[in-house]
Image (cartoon, rainbow, N blue to C red; front, side):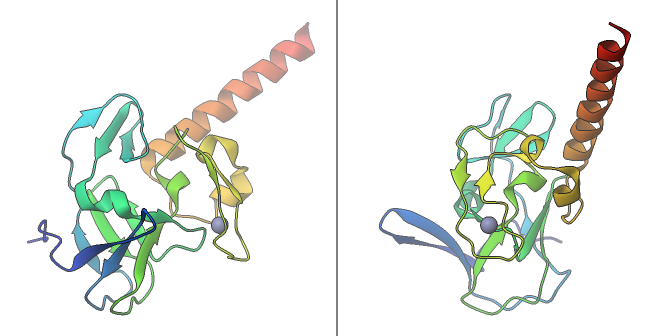
Length: 163
Ligand SMILES: [Zn+2]
């Protein structure tokens, strides 16, 4: 049984900036908790996580998860589970790679995570090159939307050549 209570997670607020902290150690690959789906919207906002092409859900406490370009958790939107990407220490902040679930974000921002592979502009998967996305775990809906975008681009190029 996967925990849905998220008792092992706490939110820390500093200067209105929220972070999600774990009170427990996790091993790489371990399920941390189920992703709650409180209500589903057809448009994103800064608190939602995208779970399908036109579905954005409120995720309770997990809304405090910040972005990192070298994150320590994965949001598996197919099984609705949060999974450790690395071994995680007690008291560590949890983060995930926003473009792994978000196609086009409502509130883009500049990333200052300091990772060597930092993408800098966090606006959603559609604004990232394939070579960057390939380095990350991606939700199935992001993969599908990327393939759709590539096919449309190819069609568009063909039309330009024929004109
Ligand atoms: Zn970054």
